[in-house]
Amino acid sequence: MWSALSLVSPQLNTDGSGWPRSQLGDFAADLCKRIHRLNVMFSGCPQLQKPWNGQAIGPCDTYVGAQCQFECRSPYKIVGSPFRVCRSDGTWSGQSPACELELGCTNCNGCPNNNCGGCPNNNCGGCPNNNCGGTTCPALFAPDNGHVEGQCNPGVAGQSCYIVCNGGYALQGGQSRLTCLTSGAWSSYTPYCRRTSGAICQFFNIPNGEADCVVEGGLTACSVTCNPGYMLVGSSLVTCSSSGSWNEQIPTCRRSTPEVTNICPTLNAPEGGRLVGSCTAANSGDTCQLVCISGYRPTDTRVLICQTNGQWSNSLPRCTSNGCPNIQVPNAALSGACSPGVAGQSCTITCQAGYTLTGTATLVCQSSGQWSSPSPTCTVRSCPALPNPVNGGHSGSCSPGVVGQSCTFYCNAGYSLVGSPNLVCGSNGQWSGSPPQCAAPTGCPGLNPPANGAVSGSCQQVAVGQACSFSCQAGYTLSGQATLFCQAGGGGLLELPHAIEQVVLVVPV
Image (cartoon, rainbow, N blue to C red; front, side, top):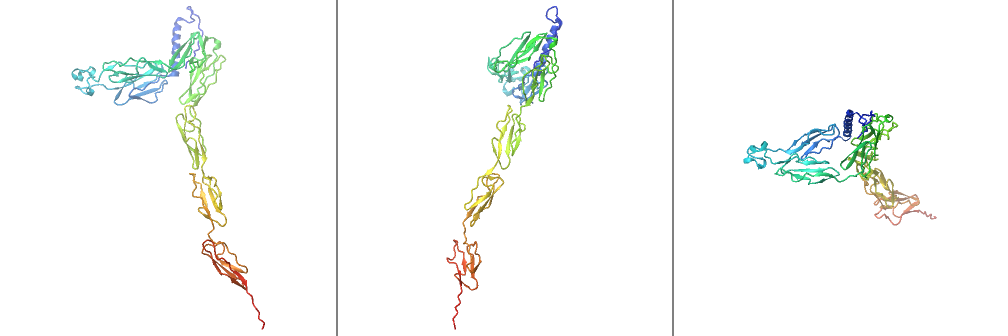
C-alpha cells in the first residue's frame, strides 16, 4: 500500500525550486526509500518457484521475514541456496536453487554411461575439471513476467529447460522447451512473455506529481507521488478494473499548507487483519487500508482518506472469516467442519435412528462462503399403512405406522384371531410381522336348556367333539336324545330334546 507523505512548505532558494540544493537530492532519495518500504510492506517478495526435480518444504509465503526451503529428489543434488528468506527490500536472500545430476567420472579410466563426451584417449583424467559427464549450455534465467523449470542453470546436454509465463502473459519469440545440445548451444532462441489479457485503462497525468504504472499478471497498478512541497489528496495506489475503468478516484497533488495538517483518529487493526499506510496520527490527505490475512476477507476494500476536517473518509471495515454459516439439522449428527464451515472442507449429516434424510448428506464449504447445497432435513421414518382385517379391526399407530409404536388387532364376535395381535413399526420402516386375520367359527352354536329342564357339559361356545347333556325337572319326561355331541362343520342332531309332562290316570274302583 502506498502512503501519502506530509510535506512542510520550504523557504524559497535562489534556484527557484523552493528547496536548498543540498536538501533536494536528499529529500528525493528519502522519498523513494519510504515509498519502496511501503510498497514492500504491502506486496512482500515475489512468489518462488520450486526447482525442476525438486520441491519446496513448507508454505513459502511472500511476506517480509517469510522463509522457504528447498530439496531435490534423488539422485539430483541442489545447486544454489537451499534456504532463502524474504528481506525487507522485497528480494529473497541467496540464489535461485536448481536440482542437477552430479557430473563426473566413475573412475579415472572411464566415463559415466560409457560416454566420454570427447575425452582425450577415453581417459577421464584428461577432461577439464575431471568432468566427462557431457557438454553444458549457458544458464537460462526467468524472463520478465515468467519463470523457468527444468535443467536451466546450467544446461546439461540432452536435458531440457522450460520457459513458463505468468497468468495474463503468453510465450513469444521461441518454444517453451529448450534442449541443451552436445554442441553447447540451446535448441532454440530464448522466448519472452507478452501480455495477452487484462483490461487496459486510460493512463493519466498528475499535475505537480507523477504516476508510476506497472503491469503484473494482467493487472495494471499505478503508484502516485507528489512533487516536493505538494501533498497527495486521495489514494496513492490506483488499480485498473476488469471493465477498463480505474477502481479508485484519480488523486490530486496540492501545495502543503499549515491548515491542512489536521490529525485524524488513530486506527487499530481488527481481528484477522493488518493496516497498511498512514493509520496513526495521519494528516489530511494520508491514506490507510485494511489488508486481511489468509482465511479472512474485508467487508469493504475502499482506501480510507484522512480529510481536512480531521475525519476519515469511511469507517474502518472488518475482516470476516471465509468460512460458511453454521449447519444445524434437528434429529441428526454432524461430522467434519460444520460450525462454522471451513473453505474447501466438508460437513457430513447423519440422521438418528428412525429418521430418513432428505437432501444431500455431504456439503462442501466453497470459497464464496456458501455451502455447495442446501442443508438436508431428517424426517420421522414410518411403516406402510395396515388395513383392517376382514370381520375385525385395529387400533394404535397403524396408518401409517410410527417407528417404535405398535398396532393392535381384534376380531368381531364369533371370529378368532389368527396371527400376532400386536405389530411394532421398526426403525427400518418395516413391521415386525405380517398382519393377522379373523377366522370364521369352527365349533357349534350354543344350546339353551329346554323348558322345564336343564343342560350340563359344554353347551356354550362348543368345540368339535364336546358334548352337552339335557335333563328334565321332576314330573317331566325327556323326549329326544339326552346328550348331543358337536360334530365337524358346526352341526349336531337335527332335533333338540324337550321335556314332556307326565299324566297320571285314576281308575275308579
